[in-house]
Image (cartoon, rainbow, N blue to C red; front, side, top):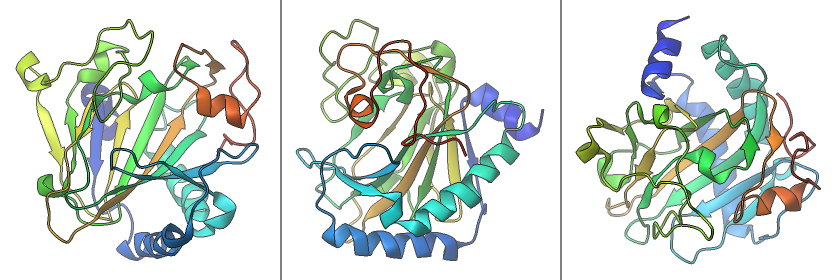
Length: 264
């Protein structure tokens, strides 16, 4: 097992620098900026992979784009990112299946804190083994709302799901919640300051949050791609799985597979 894989197993997160050229991210960013001006679709699309455009503003509805409308991003995810993840984690990945793709935007002052959470709590899968990747389009630091991670928190298992803006538990949620201040619980919290040539990879169980963008005249934009790394079945809980059931006709115990979630 490589040093990177050992660090990932221990900490639940790794920051990799100078992974690709800035020009690659610039191409994706420029295509995103054109789409962002005109994209109005808010309905989930069946039977094909989608990209969610999510502005971190309370009340802002997510917008939906297809990879067919965003070919530069599909080329990157399929031909650059997926092979890189397989290269980095050769001993961890049984399969690499696309689960979710989001482009985040935290505008100056209008954005909100996304409270401590872990990804797996929001995805009704069993087993629920995921690797998530985050790549900024812009330089990101603490002032502009960088990601923060509780190092080693992935070993705590699954926690309760909450509204990311308000931290209010979802209906019928009876699992313990992530602490409001992991540092007080003894965890080291690491702020990931990074640029467009870098990426963070985290375990789906690792606790993380991001603060508001307080950098005047600056947008904090980034790409998040989530992968399943082994075969999984649909395992719904109350309040979970709505988007999945709109993209696929699934019932409890079904294999989680289909055109919207391709293996790469």
